[in-house]
Length: 267
Image (cartoon, rainbow, N blue to C red; front, side):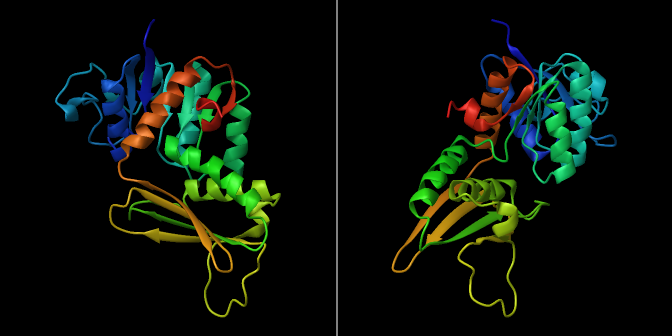
């Protein structure tokens, strides 16, 4: 069987390099393209040079050149960059795994529209563990639907630009959906000053940013006399890379549409 040809966006970034290293070591996958922003010092260099290897794939800012030989692009960049990559992927018939977070509602609508013509796998978190936690949260929320206040606490490194994290929001959506609520109406994203008593119908979010924390998430169900905490802590970005490769293998065989990690994992 021919290997799946993978392109990586943000090739010189922390996550981009992790993805390139993972593809290099994986069976059934081959690096076919590497993208980075114009002006990056990495442009023109071999994508695997940082590993002391030669892949024959040069990092480029030319989307058409970088995607010309690829079947699937894996993108963990920023919303504006991902939207540009998506338009190029649709034009060239390249499928797209999106790990980028922080999209606004208009961008989400555009992604859904593109999904009518190209296969897209989109997830706030590619970790297999996080996606198992999302399923656990649905069960917990249904069982703890009375007498428990729900708070979501997340922590990430100092360089993260969006808050709350996409994973925290996905956890909120999982809980709200299980309870029959709309997260847009019941989420509380910050508290300061005299706030009054807690509204039991709300789902609270707290955000921590600092150091090199890769990603910690805890959902707290606080009742009277007891509390339950469901947590996931990432200690390496490798978990996101491995999940993304699993998603790319899945997506390679799919028709146009929007897919999630629940489908990749067979949930």
